[in-house]
Length: 389
Picture 1 (cartoon, helix red, strand yellow):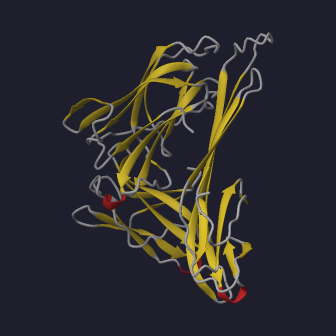
Picture 2 (cartoon, rainbow, N blue to C red):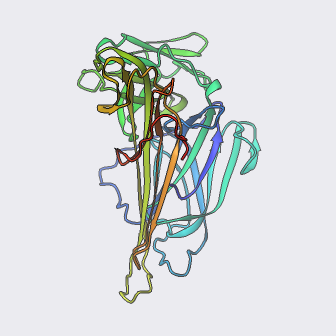
C-alpha cells in the first residue's frame, strides 16, 4: 500500500545528463523527509501487473502544499525539491516538511497518457499528483506502465542456472543504444531493488536497436542464483554518467527433480504491507506526534507439479494429496487482504496481497484451492464445490 501512485505509460527516451560527485562526509540522516521512487511495470491486456523494475535517473520535483491534519505534528523545513532518482530509481528528500500535503511532479520526454498531464512540449511531458499526504519517512511511487505487447525483445527470458548461455542480447525501443561515449551497461536488480550485477555490452547493432552483453554473473564471477531479475540498459553520457535507455527482465531457474510429473505450472506470489504509527509526544492522549510509516514487499516464484503416480500436487516443496489420477495443474487469480488495528496513539494499518494458487484435476477427481497468506495455505476444497466460495 502506497501513499499515492500515478501510473504512467512510457514509450521512449529521456534526454537528461547526470553528473556524479563523491563526497567525503557521510550521508545525512533519513529521520526527517520522504522518499520518491520511479519504476517500470509491465501490464497485460487483463490489467495484471508484473514485478516493478527500478527506472533510474528520472527527474522528479515537488512543492509543499498544506499542513497535515490537526492531530499530526509536522517536522522539517524544506518546502520544495528538484532531484533525480539514483541508480535504483530512488531519491530521498531530506528535511522535507512532513507529514504534510505535497504536489508531486515527474517529467518524461514522451506522452504518458492524458491523466495528470499539466504541461507538454517537444520531448517534454510534465505530470502532477496534487495534494498527496506524505508521511514522515514515507514514499511516493511513480509507476511507468508498459503494455506487454510493446516490451523490448530479449534473446531469452528463461535460463537454467547450470547451463546459462555465454551472451545475452537485449533490444531497446525507448532509446537508441549508443557507443558515442562508451559501451552501454546492463544493470540487473534483485526483487528487493538492490543491484544484483552489472556488465558492459560487448557489441551494439549499427542501428542502435539492440546490444549483446556477456551473460551477467555475481561480482566474484560465480553464477547468479535462481531468481526473477529486472534489468535496465543505460547509455554512457559525455560526463561519465549514464542515461536511461530501456528496461527488460528474465528468469534464472534451478533444477528440481520429480517422480513421473504429469502437469506442471509456475506460480508467483507477492505480499506487500505498510505499517504506520503516530506517537503521543506529550503523553496526554492527544496523538500530537509525527506519523511514521514503513513498507515492504516480498515476491516469490515456485513450481506447481502434479505427481501422477502419487496422487499428489507439489506446491514449491509442500505436498498436497488430491485423490486419484490427477491430470493437470493450473494457477490463477489474485486476492487482497486488508486489516486495520487502532491501539490509541499507535494506529497500525496494513495491507497484504497475494496470488491465489488453484490446482485442478478434471474429470471430477479432485480439486484443491489454497489461499496463501504469510506462506501458509488457509483453505482447501474438493472437486464439485464452488471455487469462489
